[in-house]
Length: 259
Image (cartoon, rainbow, N blue to C red; front, side, top):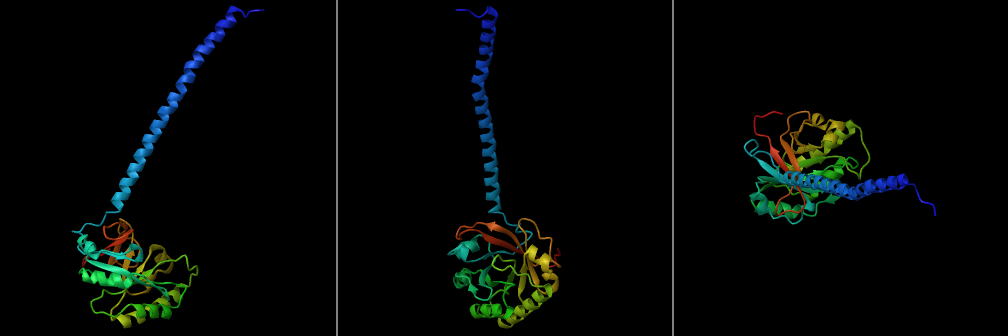
């Protein structure tokens, strides 16, 4: 049997001797890369958890905004109103009606619970641009009793996935004025309007309806609206013991300040 030349055997031995350590070292490099990637992911997850923890607890400085409160609806479950007051809620707005037919299942219980705990309370109506203002006003008047100690009603204005229509601005303002006139005749108080940023951008409702405005922006003062806000929803992610899910946290502008 013929044999390989000595030089051939040596070259094969050298190749094998250099390749084997490289192959053995590769899994170790991959392991170190995986450990580093895992560490980076863990740090990112911890940072995210810290941000979410902070967001769920942040409220504006009480010295700057002495009067603060919450807005809630049925999704917050059976609220322990004494705990809401202890958490710093000076007032509360509770969802009452939605469009021409819907009512909030927890409206009566929330109104009674807030009053019993000594929290000033008012009703909210979610306005639907697809339904007649008179029908929506009838729904509100039917379910929200007139009380002298209630806060002025709030009309929540936003787009809704259940309603794809976009009426003209003139029609929207006319219908909204009708709605406001009817519920204000019932309550005896002028209402607030609470347009979301997209809604106000499309309809400029804060410029078309002469009412006190409640604007919304998480963590930073709102920069939209035709005039200075009176109320600001500063954080819609607040979690409080005694309420399910998240509540909206709001502040009232101190007298004399402007945007």
